[in-house]
Length: 125
Image (tube, rainbow, N blue to C red; front, side):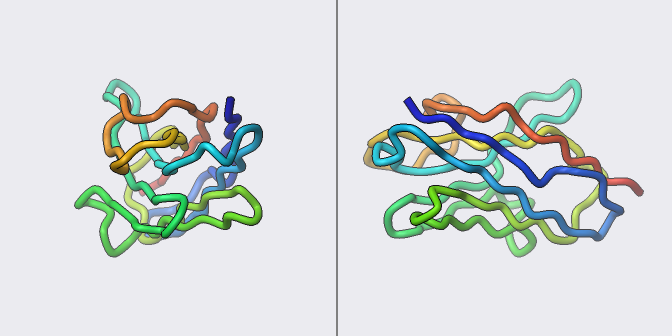
């Protein structure tokens, strides 16, 4: 099992920045990739970004390219999502997720085996 705990959410004005963290514990050696998803009220959870745990290849949804940066610190078993120039429509609960050993980094929810509890990000206009 892998446990994930997110932190770093909060309230920010449009154009502002936040940095989310996701601390992993347990069988962290089994992590193949870490992803970030978000779910706005009344909407489905959507992929935001993912990073291959070993090697660091990154993947982003088009709307966040150039503004969000996903990274990880293997020594700390922690992933990060730096979010710049946030917009009100990006208000959502942000979740981190871990994918077990695989061959491809997943961009869909079904690819991920473990989930954090989520952290609220609110962007005011």
